[in-house]
Structure formats: structure tokens, C-alpha cells
Image (cartoon, rainbow, N blue to C red):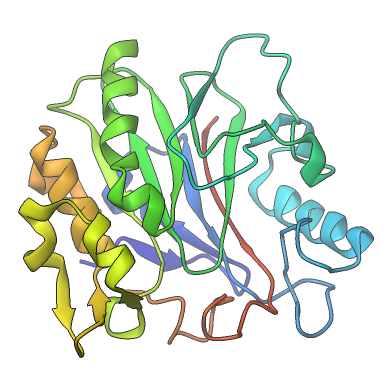
Length: 268
């Protein structure tokens, strides 16, 4: 079953049939329904690309209105392809960070966690993998950004460890692996290949020639999650590919000259 469904032209949501929680809002924006012009047309959510910042802010406001959570309740990490995680607590002074400018985002952070209502955890994507976490028994939720570096460095497991340290139950924890580049569209070189954990390398790569490989990021995330104790039946993997599906911006397909989608999770 595909875990993500179109809410409208601008938002792809994590299906309520998966979350089974009417208070949980989670998903990813598409590239449609915003104000930005080419090559960022039209719903570019990223300040860190050379788009008109006023357009980006307008686009973010469009999404805030759609999901009924104001920008002041959003929080965003800097995203540096590491495995550092920030926990958003009650009365957190970091609410709103990264919302009005990239420079204001939480420094060095690629993962966000909270158990607070009316907080929207957000991250930017355009081929990298969005990881969504929620535990229906404890109300802990999280989102993580993982490119190839975050994937091979097991960001998926770092998030589980942090969540369980905080009180989430790994036996009830749910994880969705969201729209990102698919294996058949993602070639890597020998350097990246050698950084993939050896015990899983053959399961997630296909050799193209002597120095290039197809790399299945989504599959490696699922393997890592199962390895750390997440129930395989609680892991939901999308079939959407940001490279080949027209809903999305793709850094690789568009040679870096493109916008960004917003991944988000929160509870009301």
C-alpha cells in the first residue's frame, strides 16, 4: 500500500489509514501551487537556493494556511548531511527557527523530535530521503533528512535511539520512508560504495561498471530500521521517486538548479 496520497496539487500527505491518528499531520509538498518562477517554479520552499526570498516566504505561508499551523510554530534544521538531532521541548525558544531565513535554522541539525502539540517539524528535500517517525503510544514524533551520507551513517537508527531514550517504544514505533530518488536513477561512484556498511552493501547496490553502482537509499534505510528493532510491518516505504515523478523537484535531474520540497510532521 502506498503510504502517501495527494491532498491537493501542493501537498502529498501521509495517509490517515497508515497513521490511524486524526491529530497527526505529516507529508511533503509538491512543486505545484506556489509563486516562484523557473527554475524554481512554483512551490519552492527553500531559502538556500537562489530564488526570490519573498516568493519563498509566500510559498511557505501558502502551505501554513493549508495545514493550519502558523509559521511561528515551525522549526527547521540547517541540514548539513550529519546525524545531529534536536529535541523540541515545551516552551522551546527555537520555535520559528529556520522559518523566515535559512541563516536562522538550527545549526548542524538534520533530525528533529518532539512530543509537543502544535509544533511542526520540517526539513527540505529534492532527492534526499525524508524519514518520518511517530509512536502512537507515547506521542513522540520526528523527522530526519538523509542524503547518501546520512544514509550510510545510519541516521535512521540514530533517530530511533534518540526516540527510545526519550521514552518512545520501539515495538510500537512507526516509520515512513518518503519520496526520494529511486535506485534506478541514483548512480554513485566507488568512494560512496565503499562507505556503505559492508554487511549490507550487496543488498542495496547493483554494479553498473568497474567504478559505478546503482544505490537503493530507501532499501538501506529499511534494513537499518529493522536491524535496530523496528517492526518491519511498521515501516512504510513510498514508491514515489523524486527523479522520475513530475510532482517533485530533483537536484540530480535538474543539475542542481531547482527548488526544494518541504517534509513535515506535527500533531494538533
